[in-house]
Length: 243
Ligand SMILES: N[C@@H](CCC(=O)N[C@@H](CS)C(=O)NCC(=O)O)C(=O)O
Image (cartoon, rainbow, N blue to C red; front, side, top):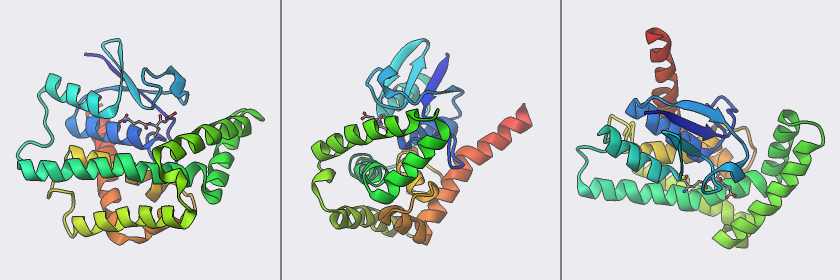
């Protein structure tokens, strides 16, 4: 099997610059499935015009949930084996909450909130050719502003958006309690999804209200550190050891 994973370029100490990239890479590393990572920031090249996407035996495929389902079946790997139907339902609900709601808050903070937009623009200026960075940022901001209005979050005031995002963070911290991962000692597919969406708020240095709040909640920061270590640092160390 050949698997190429197209992600945004790495940044801020993480192996890729997008939340769904981090979800997919975390899942692949936990599942032990080998892949080659390619960097592509232009989502227009993706089969569904969304990042990330893969080439699986040369066939393009988008949407992390569909990719994970297919690879799970092909490899006979189920990170959720042993969970009860009720636990899977809870995991499913958390995944949806983070991917469908929290994702909107994250994108709004990053591209529309003044502090996020400033941070993102500076990053693009530093990593793209002169003049191009600010132009690409302006186009991206206008596209995402429309998309976030259509999805719903962009219709609210900044205070309401901050309150909604913080409510997701606090609810997840309360749910986790003192468990290392969502369902105990080992990370499941649901952890890969929630971590992917949480990691940018925790590790990217943007000074926006929900990101600052996420960093200040000890259980959230510790959960992300555990996932980062398990999904990326341990895997890198094992690869080094086994060559
Ligand atoms: N359901 C998709 C969501 C992917 C997604 O929303 N990606 C964002 C980046 S975080 C994107 O490509 N947005 C560009 C756009 O919508 O134009 C998945 O699981 O892969």
